[in-house]
Image 1 (cartoon, rainbow, N blue to C red):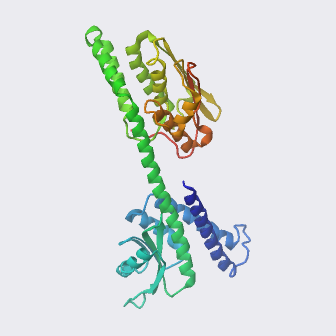
Image 2 (tube, rainbow, N blue to C red; image 1 turned 180 degrees about the vertical axis):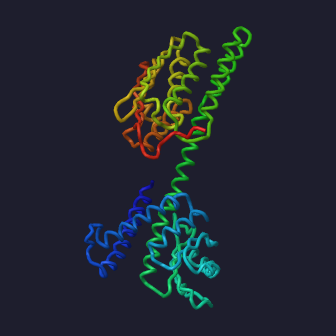
Image 3 (cartoon, helix red, strand yellow; image 1 turned 180 degrees about the horizontal axis):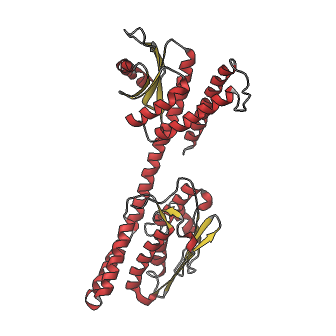
Length: 401
């Protein structure tokens, strides 16, 4: 969430709290303290205001559509206590809750001015039905990132300055939810782009070499060729899946084992792999393709840039509320200053994309305390430590089909 969105959210929440408190003060003038201990009228009104806002928020975070608008309008109208409430886009009435649905066309005719100016306007309604309570309306714009994607309209039986102010405050809160919906979509798009970048980093040479190794076994050891082909198919299927941005440590490690099995078929005894995993951390959720790029870097800068035997060690340990994964190699390493440049964004397609991408995603999801910890030096190999919380609200692997 951007700082601007956070400030706007806090302001809107305060506005709703104030609105609820105001309603409660009006009720308090008419009622005494509740002897049953259920709270004062002010407290009950404030609670109901915030509760209804909380019910409407997830709907609006999904974006402004006919379905979400209809369900949100039903939640929001009691906040204002109006006879009707409507949510619109720039041109169309998406939802009408309450009486007087026949005033939809009249509201539609008022939208252009509110959307164009971004200002609240009020108007008298016209109706031949003497029993219709919709006599006056106020249209408040929904402002998201300096544009007006729609409006909130409230209707009453008479002109009211209180209703104008209340409609503006609720419209401001709705605007914040829509802005957060835009941020959610932008975040999802950014994550998809990051995953595409990681997929693109899966070396074409690795794919070519893997297929070449498999082909070399077709005549000499058909069963081995078949096993490697299945490993290759499972590895590519996992790497290019499209069902979520998270996975489990067990699934990520399984993909890494397939990757290393293909590498062992190519390099033979030159590649030595040690894998030690505590069973209790296997269900831990972590970002998709979070570890595989780190192992690929370890292989590339270990064995492929050295004529000696390469050792890659992977540890996954339980540390209370966190899981700790360490990937270590005995490769060529690098200068610490170069490493800092890679993590800051310096161009190095062979190494920087994977390290920087994983480091950025971890920090965005869990905070700066969870960035990569990398120990390296020229000729000293590389040790990368990844820490992830075992549990974090909103972070879960994709559901199994």
